[in-house]
Image (cartoon, helix red, strand yellow):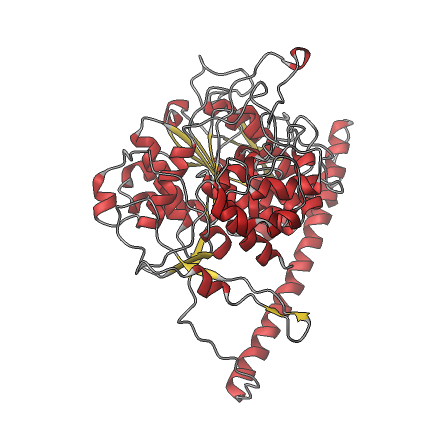
Length: 549
């Protein structure tokens, strides 16, 4: 049986409401599906049976992920109201006549918002994976507060508005706590109940594909939360170039002045306090009177300039703090101050309830967690990257933040899910109370079908949207053997240019290395009160002149 057939039988069984009093095998449940369809509907689901069959210790009521997904399973419907699931799924078939199974293909169904009734239609045709298309999202209960012209002028399409609505609706809920229900007949014992920490706000995964306008959607989240009175937000992405893109998206949604004056690039700011001195924790001193030494001399005199003389913490009382993942792991060598501490201080600590948006969040995929959900084995040659560790720590230290994960390739494999703790797939109150490693072990045991079941659960609970552009009318042609002499000449000239540039770069890097060694030698002489030889001074000035030229 292929995984696709497994899911089709699963959906049929869920709609039928198979009644099973104990953990039975999936094969038995499949055989009884036809009879059960005519009999009764119960609260127990075929998905629970499947998990219970793989592990008899699991109660059929225990799989909350699949129970949530089962409530709204339905066939996908296209724009004309016709059932398209079966037609699209026809791409997956079993060739029983020839006695072998054909390779599975991923099938898609046309997509439009199922529950959102306003907003201009997205300009391009959009599709959704057929597996997710078999599940309906929750009803819309959240009312947008953003300016009305964004909606009726089409600055955000109906698909982008749908993501904002479900994301904000998800942010209105908290994840299960340590003292919550743990499955049928399973409650924490008295000795296990500990003092509760602050409730953790649930997060949202924006898994749209390339070209869907995820950056504009993230800007929509900012506009909505600003309209709700949230003054501070964090936008983390992979490159400083995307800082200007973020400002452009905010301008396009009507926040031109805000984007110009209240959108900050953290990597360009000094390691100083970004809050009023009365609120500062003391870890960062304002840099108004700091001085910075500039390499190079005129003769034997050092030159100084004032650093960040215009830094005013009142400038950062509200706005969007943009940072890259590289900035997030930054440390000031001389003082040991970190960007993460600076960012958390700016946010205001535990009670911060603004946005933290992890754009291109797959940058944090190399993660290893302990039983408490903290990063472990962090380092260059270990199983957890520094980036992933900082992403996890930021979420743990700001439990009330409104987290949005954004990536088209966020779940390339199960282990990459580790930093997405706000999705509520593991932890206290779930079927994997021991943490991510228990969740991962369950996926390894149940296989690919379990991953798709969890995706269905996330969509049914409003924690996930994952659409992509349709390539139905796209064409391409592969052109080989371009023998035009002009093209060949351009290519050869470009190759010579890059080879020459590479050679110059290597030479310059070598000179810089030698210069640093020279500076180190001169510093050691100065520290010991010695006189620097004229030859060394000459070489230093020669390097300075070369840099100036």
